[in-house]
Image (cartoon, rainbow, N blue to C red; front, side, top):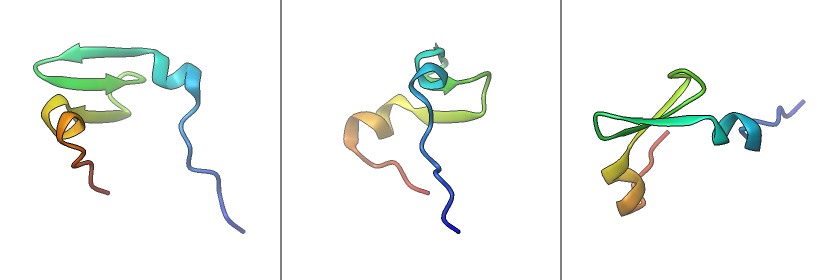
Length: 43
């Protein structure tokens, strides 16, 4: 069985910018802004 790992729009919309990071859902998902800008998001 394949699980849907997509983040919901509502969860993603609840984000904050802290110390150069995009933090979603109270730190469940964190991306450095520079990595997002450069398209270098790794798993």
